[in-house]
Structure formats: structure tokens, C-alpha cells
Image (cartoon, rainbow, N blue to C red; front, side, top):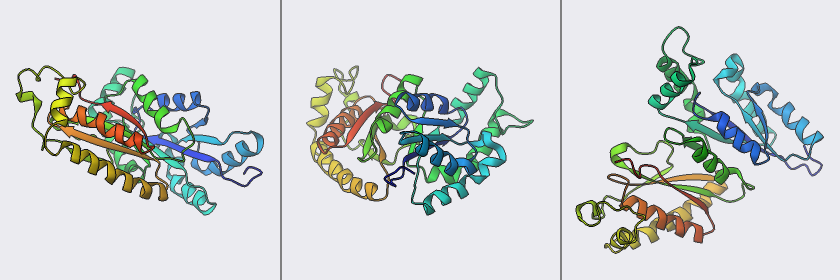
Length: 289
């Protein structure tokens, strides 16, 4: 512990093998975090005491995943010990779809840690089973299936660049026909608004174009929805902070992720920023058609 007795900020980075933990921890290192990769969970308390006693470092990130083998099974007990000592680490869980993970392992020509003599996909499924409880309790889940390393770095910077004393949000526009974002904490369905796709002059444009924006926001219920949904997020943000949750991902969907969801994501982000919530907007499916 430090001389003041205040616990350091501790971040546990975990998730699926191949989901981008190496890139994420590189970004954390750039942000000044003290990063330790593949540490046996039983050594967590010793690491924290050593770092805080010998350095001025206040932000520690530890990577723990199935590469640790038998040691990974000690993680639950290590987290319980930290809780007894008044320290609750934030948990970042990196996720990706099966197809993306298989493609990455095949590209790297490396076996999955749990595939044994079977296929990569079998190892991925075993890992999902082992990590299900940890994922369910994570503070922030990031789906990297469609993210490049630069986009992932931006997500990490948004979440962890400053001290985690305020809620931070990521608003993701998406198309329902491509699936709901697996990392979304809340999802809004904008298909109740008329679709600009059926307006010939608007069809080739996107929600970033002024004509589409004016059309969507001019529809009955659009502004009222934004006001009420922003109010809902303001109310839930207080609860998130009381429960120690500092990150929220909001999915905003329409049919194809090109018009309505893009407009409303940008508008909702503006309202959240006005409330003092640092917000990043990601247009997941824009340009996919």
C-alpha cells in the first residue's frame, strides 16, 4: 500500500485468446499503466504490494487468461482476497466471434491453448465455457471482431486514459441484420422511425450527411426519444457509479446501420457529453453494404 493507505487502481485484463489482449496492454502501457502479462493470480497481492512500496505507480494492469493453465483456476480466490482487503479490480474482457478468432489463429499459424489434438474451434468453445462467469461479471466487454489495432487502441484510451472517477460511454451504431453488438450493456431499437432507405435521394447517403440527419431528427418521436433515453442513461449512470461500474456500451440499432442509427448515435452522444459523460461513438456497420 501507499503511505496514505489508499489502494491503487487495479485493472484485470482477460478474455478470449486471440481477441487482442496484446494490443490492449500495449495501449495501457502507452497510457502509463504498470502492465504485467500472464501473472499467476496467487501473486496478485504480492505484485500490488511490491509496486506500491517501491514505485510511485498508482495504476496496475494484470493480464490473466487460460495460458496460465492450472494457475488460472486460482483467479477467483485471488479476487476474493483482494475484496477482503478492500480492493476491487476493474475487469476488462476482450471478446471476439468464433469466425474472427479462427481466422486469427489460422493467420498466425499457432494452436489455441485449449485445442489439444482437436480443432481450433473446439479450443475456442472450451475457453468460452471456462470464461463464462468472468465475462458475466466484467466491468467492460469489448468485442474486437471488427476492430483493427488502431480502433481497439482508441477504445482503450477512451476507457482508461484518465482516472476512473466518472462514467465513460461508448455508443455503437449497428444494423440488426448484422447482429446485436455482443458487448452492449444497453440496446436501443430505432426501427420505429421511418427508414431513409426508401427515400430515393437519401438512400445513397448516410447518417453523417445533413439531409439524412434533418430527415431522421424531424420525424415524430425522434427528439422525444433522445431526451428520454438520455435521461434514462443519466439515471442509470448514478447507479453504475455506486456499484463501481465505470464503463457502459450503448448499442443503437436500425435495419442496416447506415442511416437512423448513425444519426441517433451522434445525437445521443452529444447529450451524454452535455451531462459530463465522456463518450466515444463507433459506427460498426457503416459502409458494410
